Image (cartoon, rainbow, N blue to C red; front, side, top):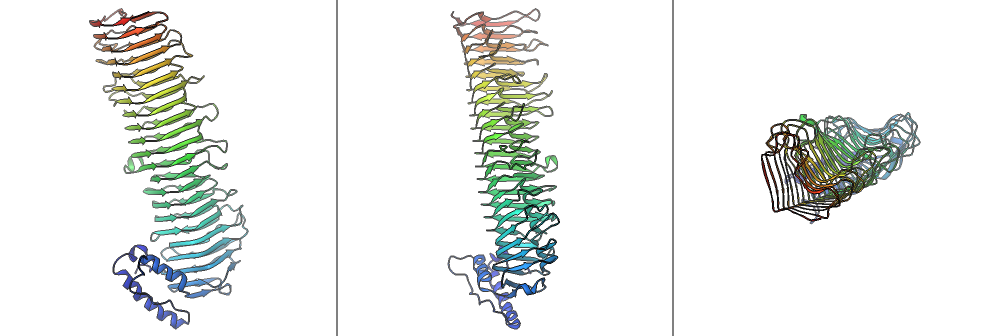
Length: 636
């Protein structure tokens, strides 16, 4: 029979009658043993009261059961039933103060405490498979030293409710509040944990844990300072309305094959969340900073999926804020670091006021990424390296929508791959006040390469430094890509210490885009520069505007090096305006292999400060075979 406190079974229609029959049996048990019996139960709970609440209230407040006093310690429970503290207990001996050897046991602390003062003493200990519950009181460690190993509570617990766990020995390096040994679903609620090296620990092969409305405060002088630590193989953790702070980790899940962590309405302070080979689902959570003792490689959120061995591993982070990460300590990791997941979805996530060595949001070998409605702001550098707002390495199918990347001491968005072609979409996104590059996409692979689409976006205030160029948008495909389409549409790039757009691919379309005030501090920069080195590669600039190329020898629009091998490329510049550059307005020169078809039509070039409006240079070989040049206007 399942334990009489099983939540799920209590909800079944026939369960209440079964419980009443069992309690009738307990009445006889209590009468035989001369203790105050539990009151008889009604056939149904009072109106508006759940079965669980009704039974729990009866157990907790009206059932006395067997009384445990100091004179009884050490106490062994060998019979199912209810056990109640009759006074505050103090245990100075070795081993367990109370040992649970059977299931179907409920321990009511009755607003009393158990204090363990011995250096090798333990609290309430049960063997694996002996399911029991504890509620309504306090479990404490007295003064401890490094010889203490804990825990205060251990076994196959199915309910811990309204219990205060406290360790007074901040020098302890291995003390635990709870050690879970598997069993049924464990619920820990309305409890708090103070100054434990590891608050909740488990190495059980399979465990499902719910932590609700709890508070964890880590031991600042301890070795680890872990809120929840798990190293089994199949794990499920649900955090609800809980605050966790620790010297190193809020949650650490290691060596788990099929782990799942979910958190709702939680507050993580001064401790990192580490997930290894498991899935992660966060909603409406707040992360604030890292403690001074934080590990050197773990940010507020660091999660590693199973990769190809676990294709269903996923991450979902929504409606969360990550504030002040890396403001303490010398070693500054990434703020969010995810790798090896089948899918990552981030919605309405704020990352702000942080320091990072590489990135605010970093992802490696993630198969599918969706970032929607997110903000990364005020990210500063660590030493001589400049961090990236959003960094993607060897990932696939990346979608960034409706997001803002602001005040970054490095590149706004960086995506690169040397192993697999990557689809990248940047849509309705603003990148502003970045150092180096606004958007940088580099696929150093050959063969088939998926497309890049940037649309309805703004890249502005891109500054150069001694380490980086300062181009607004850079897209680089390696040579001989078969499918490397790049589309930039309805996008504004402005206020740059470099070129507006530099795109190398075999098929490029820039449509209804604007580049304003580029090359402020640089020499030889271009508003829009397109090039390709693959056969039949084409490049088009349509209905776009380039204004104010104020750097030395700036060029408005340049299409060059199309199809250097077979001279089959097509270059189109149509319906564009170039205003106020100081070298060349529209340039089709520097064509190593020539163009088979060139169309320069319906364009307007004005306010040149030097050079020429149009440069349609003829290369030394493979001359332009078809050239269309009409309805263009050039003014001084």
